[in-house]
Amino acid sequence: MKIRVDLRKNVDDSYDVEIGELSKKHFKKACIVTNPTVSGLHLEYLKSKISADELCVAMVPDGEEYKNMGTIEQILSVCFENRLDRSSYLIAFGGGVIGDMTGFAASIYERGCNFIQIPTTLLACVDASVGGKTGVNNKYGKNLVGAFYQPKGVYIDPHFFETLPAREFAAGVAEIVKMAVMFDKEFFGFLQNADLAGDKEALLKAVAKSVELKASVVTQDEKEHGVRAVLNYGHTFAHVIESETNYTGFLHGEAVAIGMVMANTLALKLGKISADDAKRVKELLEKYSLPTTYKIKDAESFYDKFFLDKKTKEGTIKFIIPSGIGSYEIIKDTPKNIVMEVLNEFLA
Image 1: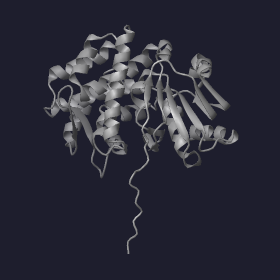
Image 2 (image 1 turned 60 degrees about the horizontal axis):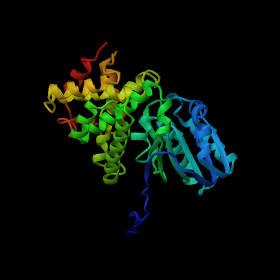
Image 3 (image 1 turned 90 degrees about the horizontal axis):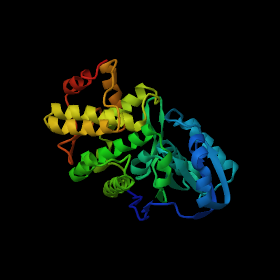
């Protein structure tokens, strides 16, 4: 006898990404999740836009090193102490770390409550806030504990870009470059000629295009069974770099920039990209003072850490590489000796 539990999706989880000055919003009960850095700069601005019958703030430590279950417990404790329920809203107010943790907390609080994203970093605006990936790091690697859980909305207000440190801004540019290299040759050409740091109009165009590209990918593949894996270009290498440096040596976007250069080196060895295209990508990253080198101390140890990556299945490492600018390949079963040649080029 077979009794089928039919779980074909019949719930519409669609939402809008709004780009522009944050409009006034009111909630019955809400909790803002943020950190001291963001709150010191922008909490009063947010409170001028957000109102609620009952509003509380969960203040968590600032930094990727605090993206763990201990911090999730802090967020949940504030929710319980203020008696939030399933109809309440968590408001992710910060960068990608805040967004990932808030979304994960929302996904498990009373088995799921509402949340929205109000990203304050360029990286979070163009990448982390869109798509519903939530989670935390642990001693085994990055984002290995988490859930796919979509927000009710994403609100990108350029006001927050004005206080971004240069490194944080550049880290966001790395994710914009990633989208162009993978999906849009014309967009890459635009980025080569634009000054995103000095031209607000060009920056907003780049943000909108990046969000549009990511939204298209997520629409096709919400839970990363296919094309969404392409968004991990550079990340397979980057996550090992972040793990080796205890999430304190590089900002996420900086590690991704190095990871893209490493992935391009692999693509070169496999004959998938020209030396000229690899040079163009590297030069665009360096235009924003992003790091493009990393000194590997032990190539064998670095290689072994690939197997803790979420994209590794049944002992097979999956690499995302460009096949020219604007197109990509997902490759499996890459011979270890080829990967080791790449890693040896980055040995200290």
